[in-house]
Length: 205
Image (spheres, helix red, strand yellow):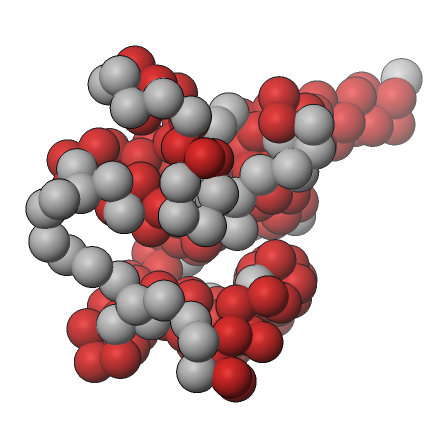
């Protein structure tokens, strides 16, 4: 009975609910509610905060960023309440939330690149690592104006930081997330190498 309950807990709070939380396309919902139409029809076609920023509406981009990060953090926190913060359930839930954002069933299993959701997961799992990763993102984005480069650098830094600021299990979860983020940025990596990647615009259209 206990084993069956553990399996049920893992399936529901470690996989199903976190995946569903992550799958909510807040960028699409927020921009549609603001009367901007389908965000997938502009810019990169992504549903994340960076593409929302390309509309020139910084407030909507910030709302998308907070919502996408929040759903990742919520998945981890809920799993921690159920399985305990020291257990592996929050780690599994964090990865599942990022997967949900990247492969949303509401978007025909397409989705965003997982950067904001990953940030929320990292903050909830280990806030010192999360803060450091965000600072890395901000530094690279400010200096080079490439959101993709900032995301890839921050994602790569997170598992290394976790070795020193958290623990091996957390570092492994961050490594998996970093690999997923890199996979979703494969086109951006090609454009970065060819120097054709578009830069972040902080202006208002």
